[in-house]
Length: 620
Image (cartoon, rainbow, N blue to C red; front, side):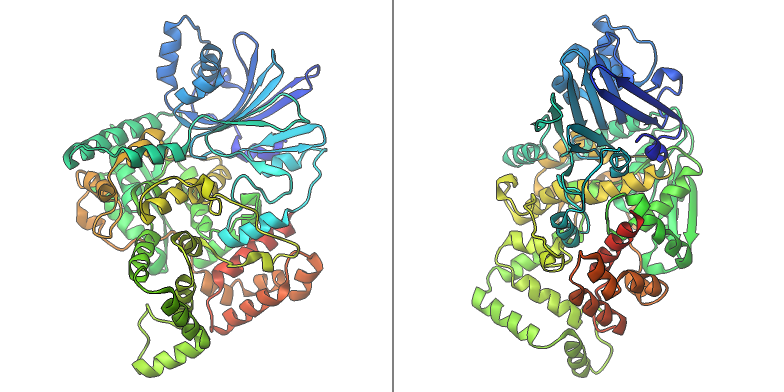
């Protein structure tokens, strides 16, 4: 099981097995702090009671170590793993975990009570899966490790597959396999009998943080809040720059990554290494903007322009890289920039989390505008508009609109967009509108044979934070669903596939708690997100280098599927193959493929979901 995960830790391997207790750990190490053998894992505590196998970094371990030394604890090495074990022995597991600042997933075995505890970090930066196979409990950082065990017996969960088609990822606590679960962020699972259900406890809750911040927002003035955020981010970045190996940063030239790099450079006595991937298709490339920011800050900048052929060459590797079906197409450039960075450094900081915390996504402004426009419109009129729009197909609308304009259509007007508008008009609540905005297939259970969609946090109001307003509610939902299950999965798999550790300073829980204490207008003002981040960044980088429309980290999927990926995709979407494999009803998929090839509809996102599952299935 450990050998399968060699890419996550190529520097060392270790195993611990207790024949009497029938418990064992395997560990692969990517050496970052204390490169000596004293950091070897699995590690046994000084008393011999606890054994740990741990993935991640606890950034405040030096402060914890100092406190423990003051309590009489002696240390043999300099690793954060040894400090974690000492803290657990001193404070107990729940209290120790609450003191840890960082990203982590670890297994802890208590040899005295014969209890296994699985622990995942607050925001879900590090992955952890678990499953019971008979009387054997399996766990690991990736599904591939669990599959390597001889007791592995399960099958594809068709209900989870339906969720995948809706969201382009499988949301926690589900996995693509029946009976195999992802741990939820901020939780501890305790198991004292492999045949019994684990007991889940929460040591940190995003919902509680959001509700507390919304109920008692900061009353400090704007200048003081900007100062506080600057100081908090500086301290967080300084902590996360600690490493005994070369370190750098991803730099897109956007607000989030530019601020992280600026704070790194402001606290470094040498040029920070920065990395950017550029594309020859200018509509998808931010490389020139990143280069300008790097030049202003004085970083040692490395950029690599990749061709469409080079990007396409990564596609066959995606199923193996992701380990579980995953269809966020920005995984392609994320993998390429990770490979570029790993040629020079072992640790890279990123700007992940800035959008969710400070209101950066386009859907926040789009959703807000739609809500304001639609609220005064009676439901009967909206339904009439939906029927009118759907009376014509998208291609009929395109022909009619072309005659009306007698010129090329404006980019914002098309039959496709009108039909998407009809879907929004048909929503009967704000929550339904949000779900529509984040959904791919609208009724995936009709596409997957024998499936129904199980509940998720997006469909269970009992799990929603009590916040005023549609925008804060959307930001909360992204924080607990899209961030851990899409963004952080993408970054973890891409970076760890090349043995690169990626760190996200915005996801320090002190930053998360600060962001949710801010009045909303400090995050979103005048329809523009990240207002306070921009004020902090103005201290380091001229506004002129950053003022431009937000871009995603995307690829031209629509053109690829009509061009260089067409033969590959046609083989995976062959109707006879789909029916033979027995997971999909082929009719709707085939119709969408035909319409996409004809150029009458743009179905690339929906088709990509199916293709990523098909490619994953072929790789099993």
